[in-house]
Image 1 (cartoon, one colour):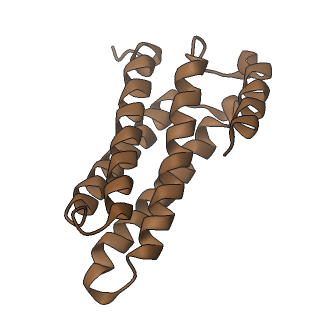
Image 2: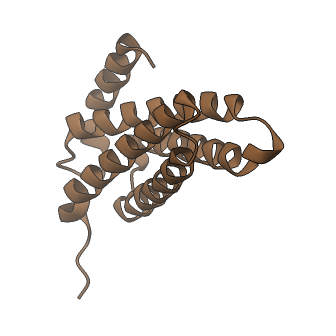
Length: 145
């Protein structure tokens, strides 16, 4: 997504912030995470395409899985009225886990592939952004008695 698209998306989300069940959400942090998801989806898709071949099947598959997870996470955040904090936390954790695994796999090929190196970096950035969102949302989680 370009800056114009992201600004439009954030303007729309801010218009509907009152509908968001999780009040007090840090919209700037959410925008950062959405942007990280978008960048990761793009990098993983391109890396998977460049890694086609039998000896690269694991890396290709992990990149495709990470791209799918990033897209799903981004779409969940862009539906503020349907936000359910426990589900968001689980999705953020799953996205972070997949991003870290993909980064590790891509790093095994980073010396011979700039695509893999860049993909690993973007996956790490997404994992860090997911962690920030989880930390920010921790106070929104229902307490267990």
